[in-house]
Image (cartoon, rainbow over all chains, first blue to last red):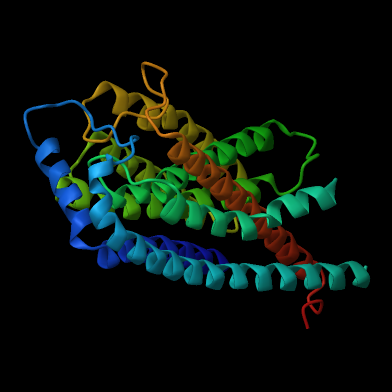
Length: 105
Length: 228
């Protein structure tokens, strides 16, 4: 049951993080994703290189994006805080039980 | 030494928020993909940890089968725990990957070689848990389960490293690619590295916690009133 709880919490953390990125980001970022759809389904079979930062001309929508990114970061941090509190409390309970059992011996 | 390891494991409470802040606020958006590319800082570490967990479960199974004098206790249980964490992280990898695929390629599932490989890996490890459940209470459970995990580990290099490199894939070129060059900005690379370390520490922390719970269950079985 513990494992299922932990797995569910990690899954929730990942899904809500990803969903927060999708829902909160403005249209400026969606245009970027649209470019990739056409590239990936086009004639050029070369794999996409995702490892380069965006060129400077995209700085204008970045002002809106940065504002929303703060919101996304906040949401994800709140989720992580919940998960961390759960893990910390579980850890403390296990430590307490370990001490009790050691004392019994 | 134990104290130092304990502190290192608990550093996950600091490392993970640092990773989140770096991923969303410090790392630049990737070319073409824009801000959606930030999922990479969660998707790749999750995939890495799932492979790490499966490899650890396989290695522990090898030790369990070789340990005739029973010097290490509960290795079959530990390999079970590691495989369980690996499965949970693999499911998370598939979920984050599907969301990213929808954004980048227009569909949640494309039967890309990597996606197909991960389905096989999931099926292999789900079958392991079915096997463990079917053998519950039998003395041969540990040996059969460990043997299965070793065979499962042997299939990993084919599904994770070989097939996606042989067949053309929608996935971008891997970080460790043919040219041995990292196509990433320094900030992105540092963020990814931090995320990999954070998720690895999270795995170690969860693995340790689950093993301690397993030992506790065993001890409480010996002293039924200990938990009262």
